[in-house]
Image 1: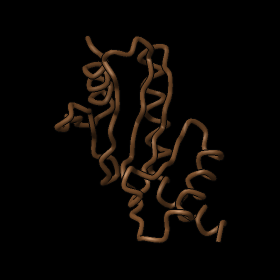
Image 2 (image 1 turned 135 degrees about the vertical axis):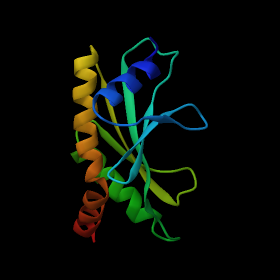
Image 3 (image 1 turned 180 degrees about the vertical axis):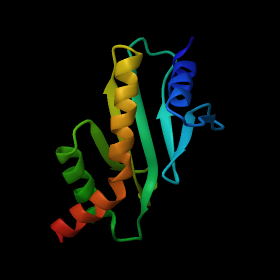
Image 4 (image 1 turned 90 degrees about the vertical axis):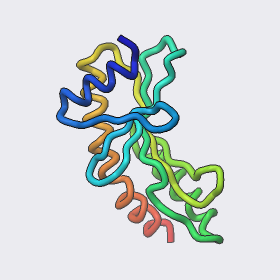
Length: 131
């Protein structure tokens, strides 16, 4: 079984209905958010990146503050990264982890989903602290 099929099986076991996007990435709807599970079949390591794309939209002129907020959040959150997309018009967050087996992978997914559920509110809290 490949990595994607394994992720799909674990997500189904957790009660989710995983789907594939046009690029072949696995995603689920979690708390009304599209959450993507990014894997590379070429990688030999057991690594997963779980992404909440574009969870904050930016207006022109907000890029500097957004970069500062992303930097603060990336420093403070364990195993999470926050960054501006290529267009500098939105903020994306990822939770990343290595796993040893399916039990560890399921634990990492659960922990990441809990973290993803509060990314937007934590972003605005960090923004407030910096202003």
